[in-house]
Amino acid sequence: MRHIFDIDFYNHINMTIDQYNFNGKKAIVRVDFNVPLDENGHITDDTRIRGALPTLKKILADGGSLIIMSHMGKPKGKVNPKMSLAQIKDTVAKYLGTEVEFAADCADAAAQAAALKPGQVLLLENLRFHPEEEGKPVGIDKEDPAYDAAKKEMKEKQKEFAKTLASYADVYVNDAFGTAHRRHASTAVIADYFDADSKMLGYLMEKEVNAVDNILSNINRPFTAIMGGSKVSTKIGIIENLMDKVDNLILCGGMTYTFAKALGGNVGKSICEMDKLDLALDIIKKAKEKGVNLVLGTDCVAADDFSNDANTMVTSCMDIPEGWEGMDAGPETRKSFANAIKDAKTILWNGPAGVFEFDNFTAGSRAIADAIVEATANGAFSLVGGGDSVACVNKFGLADKVSYVSTGGGALLEAIEGKVLPGIAAIRG
Ligand code: AMP
Image (cartoon, rainbow, N blue to C red; front, side):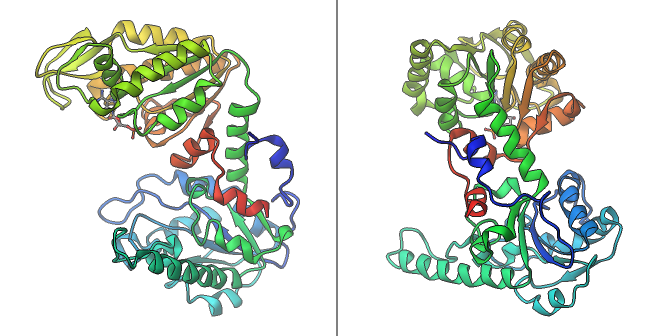
């Protein structure tokens, strides 16, 4: 199967941001400014804003004007002041070193966009205040017989909405990898209103594409993938896809106990998907057939309560007493994980090895992160992606010691699963 991230495919993209001269042009840029805010509306982590700066600064430095658009949160098609992008305007202005104008309705900003002069910046209000952005009909159940008609009508409205956004600018740049797996008005539909030479990926998006490409096409061996998190069911697509590529596959976190149960173990009250036991056995069988070294937890740190202060014990994953649950990888498991990682030359990590939000259950994730850092120092290419594993490397202060930390959660997993991302396909034209 030809993959969207093949170098071959990538070379077919008509225009790159480096080639384009924005002088005298108005550029509309889709960014991911969905930053976390505290209860007073102050930004608690501005990584996403900083991530988009190279693209935004290049446009201004060329002598272009900027129209910035993003979503924030899930306002479900309604105006919600708690998710207003007005709250981040000053931070954007600070980083760009220039004033930023604000359009209180992203669908009614034509006059403000028209008035922009080179070097000036307009930030549009949250795209998702309009249901057309996501293109899903609101207030109607999927089971309702009228749903299909409502969806069709909404798709037409979505095109109109995208056309309005497109009308503000001469050129469209998509720098929002986090939403590239969605066919939304601002991430994909809008691209239809620009010709091939007037739409392109931003720098952040290019970096993400290259990082995924490294994982999928430039594999130096051994290749170790570490999949953690809570459930097998949400990761099965990527696990099956990776089985054809990796030498070592570490499955950790909550899914450990579905495997242990499937193998006849007692898992106490650990998180366990009883309807996925056959699937777990099937994964074990496939790994054997394909010669993949499947590494599962053997011992765990179990707790008598789902809390940081719970009583703990180290026990076999196959023999967790009633009333106890596996919360983290045990010492023997941590060693076997580290062994499968430290000599690898290509590494992908998605999902923590334990309930890392509680400080007493971070050891498994920490052991993984340390081994990745060691392998990276020895020349491996390491990609860490997906919200929680990124939160892990940030918590351990190790983000700059791995090769690449992806901003994409769902988008990254879908890309690695081999799915075409609408946000990238739309630019390709
Ligand atoms: P996911 O969103 O599927 O990547 O899962 C991430 C979540 O998995 C994190 O919030 C972790 O706390 C959770 N997790 C990891 N290990 C366990 C475990 N042993 N029991 C329950 N939750 C876990």
